[in-house]
Amino acid sequence: MVFQRGSNLDNDLRRFQAYRDWCMGAGTDGPDRAIDNALEAMKKSVCPTEVFQRRLAQDPRFEMLLGTSAKGASTNLDGSLRETWVGLPSRTGKSEFHKFLDTDTEKWAIVFLPEHREHCCRVHLQIVWVDEKWGGLGIATRAVKALQEITLQVDEMCRDEEATYRDRTIRCSELSLWLAPCCFSAPDWDVGDDEPSFLTEVDWSNPDKATKGILDDSGEQLAPELTRLDWRGLRDWYKRLGFVEVDGLDYSEEWNEEHLRVVRHPMKRPRSFEIGRFPMFWPPENAQGYMKEEDKEE
Image (cartoon, rainbow, N blue to C red; front, side, top):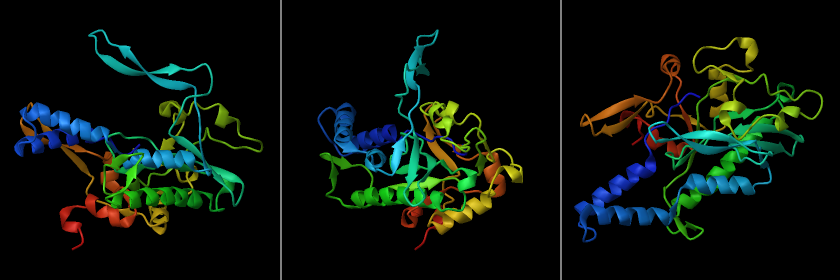
């Protein structure tokens, strides 16, 4: 809710590899051959975020919440395609929401891990939610630590130059878990006294529908009674879990071919700039790549 998407990593990688190979004389057909070579290499590799998602699906502590929608495509008047949502006859739609089953308390939490295809080397943790009456039991802490365990497993694979996943090389040399300390209120998510009906009522496969009733402080400060922590308290809680702030993601840069210049795009909402809120990364050693040059450790 706080950050906008940047450039497409796969496209950038393809362009860079093609240009590099062409400069080095790869192939006999110049840039066209180089592009083919780069694309073929990408088919034989895998993003660590994909490995993370597969490990998450195999972890008995996490259960994907299903919905009643699936992505489809519609045709605009000019013949171009646009993404749409198509209703399903039953609750079989996959989602980016997961139920964390806490064995210590036999309670649970909801985590939201939206997929950004352009972010091949980092997993976005956008929401960790625990019902208010279960607060203070450590459920959210154990949910985040479980995600950290999976992240560390994949990160170690990335650092092993000889490691492969299902006969494919791993594309990045590290994997990070990142977030923005943005407090929120989800009044429509209420466990109540009995088994919560909202788990089987919300269309989890459509993030816009699933988060429709959520209020957050990305645009303005929320009333104190709506949240258990303000954003600074949330930031400090994540710091205790080992996350560190990074200041190198305020803007993204991309080459504008029409104007022949580099264009900067803000990656944070205005309020985040105003209050000094930064994204946070884990494990800490991976944060150096997202720091401003003057802030990097020697």
